[in-house]
Image (cartoon, rainbow over all chains, first blue to last red):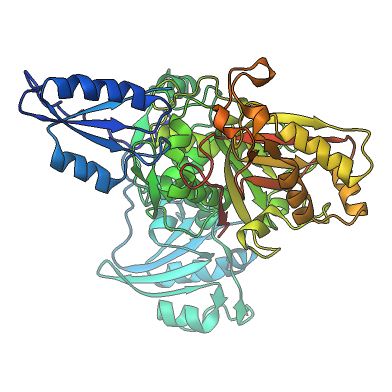
Length: 91
Length: 483
């Protein structure tokens, strides 16, 4: 019988439950996160206009670089300021 | 498998011997004498019949008793009382044997003293087996048992732990041996391994180094490479997750290159050298197995590149008149280190006609300007691997590496007019506003120069980088190789 040593992290990934989606956006603050991919702003500008037309409060954010995860202060700022985040992947 | 149970006499003398030891043979008559006078138990490590003068020597060819008694040297003489050891001596030393045994006039015909021999249970391979048998390895990784009929290579494939090529099964014995290549504690955490940010221990590095085919003496290089890759400046998560081609490219400098017989010369970037091949592979397996970074999962590469199996080579410091790559990071010559660069593939610079440094530099610059797209500047970082025959042209003209770098950066200044979208019939490029300006193909510090390759052939190479080169993305990182 061959016995080998586990080469992995020995962690089965525990998937986190998603938060329930809101039924509507009225009365909520929506964050729009630009991940710094080219042309992402075009998509988000349009969403911004459509949401604002409907009287929904919109706040805009931007990652410093697409190459790295959003810095912790930015993530904390978003969590503190909005109820919902939409981020645009683009190219 | 259960730990062997070893029964030792609670009281009396114990001797551990082997036939293949002249001092044990010399002391055999003394043991026979002790057996007549006292309660003596003899464990024999190799030949169960030895010593013939003893009525019933106990066969310890499995070495379980020797291991339990922590025998280093044979013969060893021990006195136990009430189940506890109270005296021990090894080799032949009449006074010591008389003290331990409490008997006088032992071995009158023998010389007063003779050194003993190494015990079999501390020979490296046997010691590893004993540590495993007695569950004393100190290893923490989960043990995985394969069934009798299971092919271990296939079983490892099925678990998704390979890069597509077969791996060496990481048995406890192989992992223990691998850990012998470093003085570092197997439990030491090197850092958080992306993409899952898992604490990465020296032990997990060793397991994956075994799988990659490394020898224990490569382990310090693998550890330094992993430390470099885990430096946030290298941005391994991004290097892995990008749709672009890149992966870690490792360049090794310093005496360790020759100590582990790395290839810096002919076919340095190719196949065939064990150290080059397996060190780079180990790093990739760690990202895959510990970090959880797999193609078409977090690894989103569109094409990838063959260097994502392994991309590791040594710089030819001895054959070069230039400062090694490690000096760019402030290390003195003679210090072993690994530099990691987010790179891909190899684009050849073929120039067999240039005999002046000016012409050759222009040749190289034109090739460099083509990386990613001729319409993009700055495009990415790059590593220029200069072959010996090309370096000779620079050396004979007195060009240092810095001089070549300065000249190349100068030659890589590109008129913005040629980069405007649509120019050359290519839609890629920049808005009209770049016209009239000048853009460099590389950010300052974004071009690295390394010397490697065989003596024949005017063929240098360019290893392209990631579009997110620089502080916002991935920076080349250097780490010293420590024991």
